[in-house]
Image 1 (tube, rainbow, N blue to C red):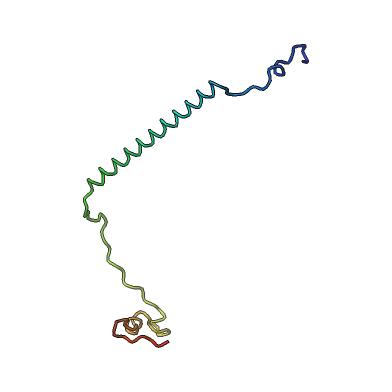
Image 2: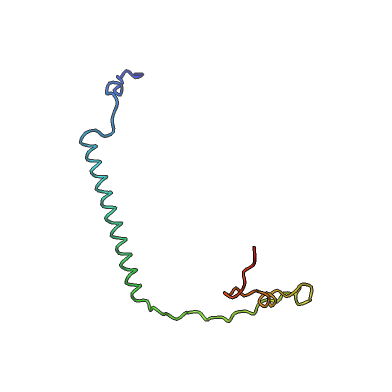
Length: 109
């Protein structure tokens, strides 16, 4: 009202963004877009699964490895055991381990 013109926003009242038919139309549009998106996602998943099944059918079941197998390395020696400072646990553990067979007596509680 500073330039002599009446303030139109005060006479209109609150402006609602969507009412009645416009709101219903927007809801239908959003629903159809959501439905179309779900159909596209299901179609894309179907294409991917079909492609994976076709590729799986073409794979040779017992395919040979494509890399050369390297022989296993010799176990690293223990320098303290070689010097005689500590006992060699790698050979002693196999000989000293008790056999857990059925004929072995169980320890008494």
